[in-house]
Length: 346
Image (cartoon, rainbow, N blue to C red):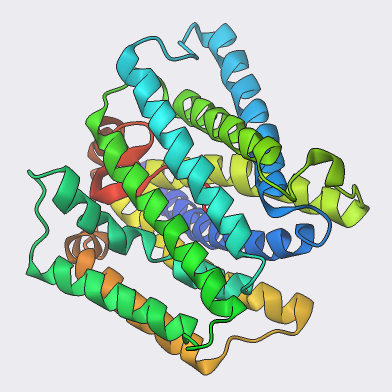
């Protein structure tokens, strides 16, 4: 009887963990998807680069304070020491946070959140192209080349380029550059080793990216912290993006990494556009146009080609979670294997 009780308890605990993991996956996709709606709302009162800077000023300081507090309790190291560690957080801060979000927020002025989230899903498709040029030991195979081509074709369909120009094409172009900056930064960070904890590295990456964005605010016309209209709606959007989507999303993503490993956890990024579109439809009554849906399908097919091995592993059950956690730890603070960056995505 005791053995039976133990078995039932084990089955019950396993079921609870499984349901909790699914809920966390869906919840994280919902938070990151609705973040695009929060960006659109905040842009009504805050200039785009200024908004991005404020988001990461707040998120970086909150995460660094949490990291320092944890270090005081545990004796762990909370700041970079070596040249490689500074290079890691500097590269990530400049490309994966700074340039990436400057272009993303600027592009979000011209396209809906649903379109923006779809274009941003191009990031993992572009990564092999940069790996080909910068990491010769990781040559993409034929399937990955096809995947990159499909991803670019999908973006063209989403943009629906008008020969006379247009705001949609401009917004999509800025988003493509944003995705490219993220992909390039993800590849470059693979060159560096770090002894920092993942949370500490992420905090410093956010702060360095925020400092770069602050400099853009000072130097670019039309950008100014004095231009911020601190309406309740704008402040709520900023709080949601900084605390919920950035800090909370980061911690939730690491919980998924702990449960599933980086390959499976990275698939949350492809549930984000559905929630972005749903949030816009519920809040603004705006639905995705059929060509946009078709373009997303093409990008998704490209992702499937590029990440074929990852998808096969993700659909093959494995009880070896310690090995998955070790894989995540071995892959670095900003990048993990299969070119997955530990990020809050938009």
